[in-house]
Length: 549
Image (cartoon, rainbow, N blue to C red; front, side, top):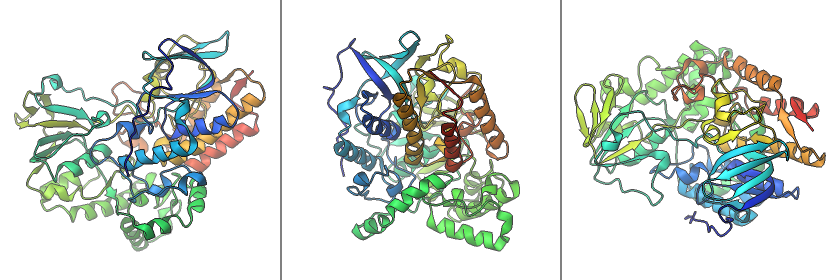
């Protein structure tokens, strides 16, 4: 399947033109497109402003070699039957090219692009109390005046460049994985260096190692990656995956992570060690996130339960690595952090690649990177690694970064970024006191990073839609989360977090990868079912925690 992904800009108003809207949606990924499609049914004037030239959000920007989904394709799409009945992915875990093609299919079916302003980056938003509207400015494009603004910027909208001196002196070519050239880049026969071994690092390493003349991987923390069990799908396999699609979609709302499977139970102590290992063998064979979200919930709470899973994982991985010293760096005897408290990556042949003569692992805890030179990377032990291409797989200011990157100014004179410098507080992970008539989907303190993306975007998105429907039906012109509701939700998230092992790792889940960011769990740790129950409580109280006028 192919995808053009280049949309005409004829639907973009001229510079300086003002659009009067009921709702402005920022971002054309899963969350934004869901809002556009649903809000149209209310007869509201709705537009999406999208910085990219095409649909897909993160799947527009993340086009590096190896970029692919870590969820089974059937669950990585909208649940609307008119959409999934006309669509099949070609692989169990589709590559970004297939996901882009899927978004084109959604666009063709729902006719969305006519209400999307591509190449239109939102830079500033101010709330005008007199008119009770947001005034939203863009980078050289139109200005919008909107009753409500819905921010759908996703959890990976703000890439982080590492603070390493000398990057501007490098004589070769360098790219962040999230800012990859749209027309691609040939990796063959190049001396390649990859800094970072998170999800994007694992994926680009798997593509680089087979074709590079030499690959140097700079690792700070080993990735506790799980087997993907990737496979091509023939017609029979596609038909088999679609047999119970409606049941799979229904399961999303009642499983912790919005997948078609869930934890086996709350307590691993209910099983013997032999029974646990038998279960883990079965989950390992099935692949995907099952060894993470298909075991027992106390694996994320209890050291002993967690260590057993880690040791199982470690021993499986070590069987694939020939050099014992290398095995210790990639799958250490002692866990570098509790298993599963950093989002596991899915791999196909990641660990096997380190057996190749053209692949070298550099442990930057032992040999820190001192600077980037004209020739490559210089480490503190004096060794210089000469490179043609440097790839920065250094992650994102995750979950909140896409929101705080916009100069959004509320009623109290400070920007959202300034308000959240003291730590993030929000009502239901969807609204913030001091910023009326603004909601965000798939952002901080929602299930976002703990859940399948389309599931969270659609399920939280439906709650957002119902709230806008309620406001519109009642003629409400202003709503705002109370300060007490914001604080209460923050305390609720923190209280659950403290019962888990997530707080023990320096992860992007905790905001620990961004200097100066308050260390707190950024995603709702209670699971999708409990999150939806909290929304139901708020709705039954006439949207309690909001002041509506």
